[in-house]
Length: 249
Image (cartoon, one colour):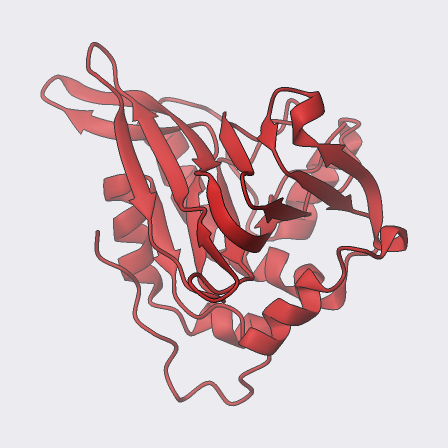
């Protein structure tokens, strides 16, 4: 699959997450999302930012809950959901990414005949979630050790679901860990499922469909169902930041 261009040198402050988001090639990213249901956002975070976020994992005061995957049949490994207020970097990334993905979300719903539309800014969408009782933050930090993996799943937390999410790789493949590829599967009507393995390096992100997306067929547009996961970690330790735009009950 084609991937978005590397971050241009014209970004004045290389550590400003909003500037880095805005500098990405969003027409190309949008085209990839429409064609494949996922797109790589190259160099979204610096290596220092990745290390700083990953280093938060032992600090339980930053999080509202911890999930050990093996206890729930989710796979092996663990993750923690951040508490409000979110760390500054994540609090800036979430609305910046939403602003660019909101148009894709609305066009997908229109194509699939879904009446729901998403407001232009993330604060307005979060108010919709919170008014419906979905007030718990969903950004999460995942930690995998050798032998861990994440089963194919969907991150649905209530009535109000934003149809795209972003996962950012905080560790460096080949140095910090081996294995652990991001995997996306697409279940197509009356056809076998299609798998997509997305190559990432430290600081790269993948934007992808949470639940389903529209696909143009010979008889019009139909919905395909998507799930995502992570293949087995063969060695080392892998950290990932998950940015989900709807909050949970």
